[in-house]
Length: 127
Image 1 (cartoon, rainbow, N blue to C red):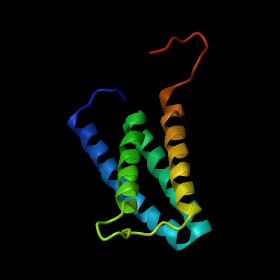
Image 2 (tube, one colour):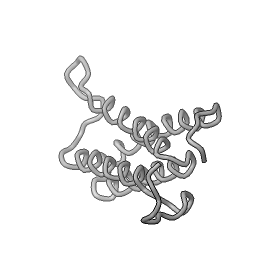
Image 3 (cartoon, rainbow, N blue to C red):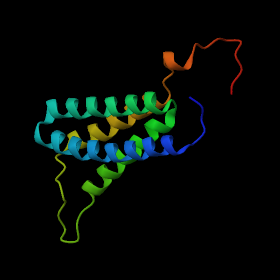
């Protein structure tokens, strides 16, 4: 796919942004509820979101849209309210592992080169 932004591609990116926010909120709940298995489930959902965004858009923009939505949900749920408590509690290492794991998955999927982009040769110059 070309790198031009047309209305269809913008709609897909906005959809990925919304799905990323929903996945981030669901992941926060699952990691907090079932720590070891929930963390794995949340990271698998993020991997599916990022890889699906990469394939759907055909570039790293799809990963970026999903990652921005996920990160915004993560930050909004983790910011303390004016009353002094949190919207959702973060219990220890699980949420840090979710943040670090999601970041690693986003970078991995953004720099991925799949069969849909063609092969790489040493003689090929950069774009």
